Image (cartoon, rainbow, N blue to C red; front, side, top):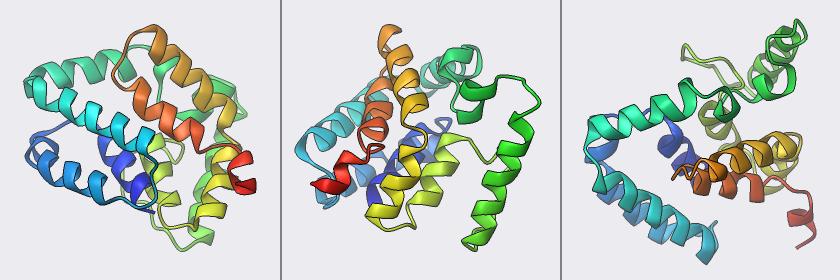
Length: 172
């Protein structure tokens, strides 16, 4: 699903390639059929945020937000287990799930890294994606709340993900 690929790209560390492709991403958002108006508006605002700042400022903000502030971590199991020994088996299980779906992870990131998770669920149908994300709803809501309290522009992206991580969407 296109929305998850967009969110994955926007939640990655910002680099020049991302900045160069912002006009194309904006066009994809406009044409994205699997989003509602509120989601599209939030994505356009985020793209405008990225376009309004120098790349080095965006990179500093990203590092401060996600790498230096543990309560904003994009590693989902961190919020469940911290450094507890139970985190390892959870990461292994997630990696095995990717393999079961025929997905080969070619990154140095752990399998619970949200942009990687979003990249994976982009290949699932809408119902599967919702069920998969619903397991992480509580964690996604906590991260969204933490980012909102910090007035982070990234809160809007996490809000979209958290909003899609509820089984009530299946009844609609």
